[in-house]
Amino acid sequence: MSNLIKPNYYVSLEDSKIIDHLQLLARKLQATSRTVLSEEETAARQDELDRVYGTRDQILKDAEEMAEATMRQAAAEAQRLREETEADIRSWWEERRQSDEQEQEEAKSRGFEAGYQAGLEQARQSVREEYADSIQEAQTVLAQAYERKRQIIREAEPFLIELSTSIAEKIIQKQLSLSPDWILDLTRSQLARKRDKGIVTLCVAPKHFTFFKEAREEFEMVMDSQAELQIVPDATVSDEGCVIRTDFGSMDARIDTQLQQIKETLRQIALRSEAGTDHDELS
Image (cartoon, rainbow, N blue to C red; front, side, top):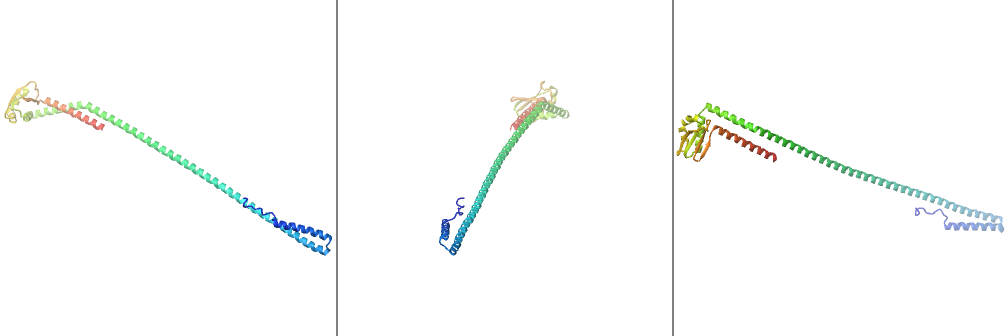
């Protein structure tokens, strides 16, 4: 502000000297007029003195007006500087407030985003845990169902096998009652399969001895030409079947034996089926 407000209200050195000279001259004129000058000269000197005082007063008035103008200019400049300073302060505070609000919004946004991500991850983890629990529960239920299935099969297998063999036995008995020669066809097929040489002994139930003996020629037709057939009654054979004995071993073709073999085969099939089911469940 000191560079802008200049002390222009003071009287310059030159004007001050003029004023002092005029005042000195006025005093001399007054003194001279009182001693030596005539009235006419005194009047002329008085006019000159008035002009001097008028000039002095004008100079002082101009200086005063200049000082007042300078003061007004200085006051206006000070007001302008004050307003600019206040505007700068307000602008600085506004920028600071906006910066603080922006930082708060950014912090809030970061906190919200962090909270959102944390909540999202927590929700995902909860869903994963619920899904894992559901899978575990489903696997448990499935395992229990398979175990129940195996239990039912295990409990039902003996009954089903007995039922199957009983039905097969009834069918065979029915077939034999309708076609007694069916057992002869079965015996003939067994002899054809063996094709053994040497003595071939056909053991039959005593009550069926005559029936088998009458079919001797049919049996010999399917046997090896170097084999000798012997048909003998055997008390261990109680049904329509027979037992074939050779030098290489024997074949039990009794109906009961065949049914037992069928029953055992069914058991083995059931066991293999259960083992396969267990393997599939584990895989």
